[in-house]
Image (cartoon, rainbow, N blue to C red; front, side):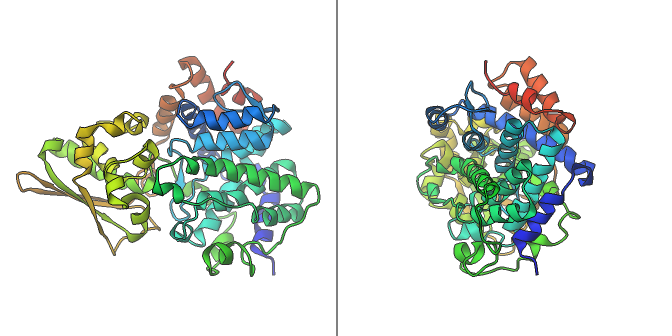
Length: 456
């Protein structure tokens, strides 16, 4: 019987652009657009010089480093671009797998496609193979990586990047399987940043893409890796989680059911767990004309699995120490949605997280466990607001906005790109990049697209 790695490798090897439904291809083009905008905006963030400095110090190459004048070899360009793509925590998430898929898949495919001179259709097919791999590996153990302190994006993403890179390199089925086996020894990424709001999580998609590309390169050269890397005695699940879940979600309906379509775009630049609560808060603010002074108390009904990520330690969540701390604070995010007409990148800036009026409202936000929550099958939100005058207002969102059940419109995703890219590029360049990204499938080369992402 074929192993999971062998099945994924066969799917990746045999996948042709024409076999991918048009809906999926168009969806992926929007994801490329989204990621390029986020990566461009991230170049102005405080963490960016450290990442870009490493790339610059370690030599030049043929690949574009987004939003800069730098060129780098594919693994280093992927490291930088993947880290920038995740730098604002504004990139998409597959709900069940709890993986940031595009921040791994898109930079890996773009770098390999640019360096190898591939056309857009070939690169798009490699991306789809990556999306299907990453989401399904995470779906086999929903929420379990996070519960053990692993970042599923970093862990599952390394396998996806190995197949994305391997598809671009034209590896055989056996070589793709070896690449997955090698990727298992390179996969890593822990969540300890939650203890102090430090930067390391931003690096995880870049590192996953970087490691996956190295795995594919080694496999191309004949290096071997175990075909049982996922379900084996010392494979991914038993080693990282301590047990083997049902592996059937990895291969079930592969090529017939497209998990790519279920990766949720983000309307807010913060942890996806917060979003439905923020929408509830924003709706009550609009409907009732709420002001912070009118609010006595806010109770969020939260699934237990979200508590360690966005609710605790409570004092730090109510008064974030860093912008990244704020992005993983339910209290701060809900307070922002109750205060601001538009929650965006600047909401989580160093200056804004010191706003005492906003922090005073965050101190009024508490949580209670919701044992009936469907998490992690969905990221719902329920909250109650008790007003100073004694009234109690309630709102619930069963699905986070941007998910397959509550999707963003294409024009909303394009508008998000324009806002993000416009922080760095002039309007004419933003417009040209938008057209090039949405026309990815029809492009003969990626080089003109990526030239629009570079600074002169």
